[in-house]
Amino acid sequence: MSSVTEIVDLPDPAVQPLVHPLDLPEARGHFRRSWLIDSATGPGVAACLAAVVWFASNSYVVPLIAGFAVLVFGRLAAGFSEREAWAFIPRKRQDRARTLPWTWRLGSGLTLAVLLAAAIVLTAFRLERTDISDPVRTVTFGMGAAVAVLVLGDQIIRLIRRRPEALGMLPGTVAVLGAVFAAYTILFG
Image (cartoon, rainbow, N blue to C red; front, side, top):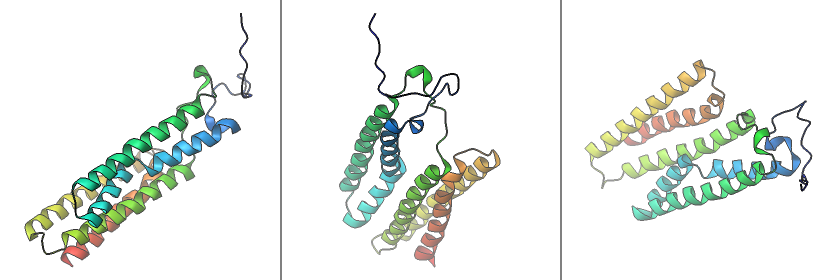
């Protein structure tokens, strides 16, 4: 029978039976890279980028291509780095249920919040132009306000249930509410 050569030194199974890539210096860099790519190319970020490109280009095709490319290539790159990080740990010892540090969740939420606020405000400036009729402007703002109410309700429920991701989503919620207020001021103020 051939012996298996370990690449990394895992913690003693009696002391720490489950291991996360953040516990191993060799896997930590791959996991951080995966998280950064995932935070910078998630669906929300891709949608916000598409809205910003739509504002800049006044085209419907280019934003779809940009958002799709960021989403697909980001998912591929993040998945590759994540698989590389988990490859250091045998399957039965992987701690996949561990929550990420709160600073990471907050950083991810802040990234999305900044892009979301920028996309909403730029969309409001685009809707303010004269080629958009008042009924379209009103309906679009109404849909955005309804989404803001749903986001606020979801955040309140997560805070009441003390979910670990509630803190990371707080900046996004504040950004949505602030941006909807700014959009109201831009469109109807």
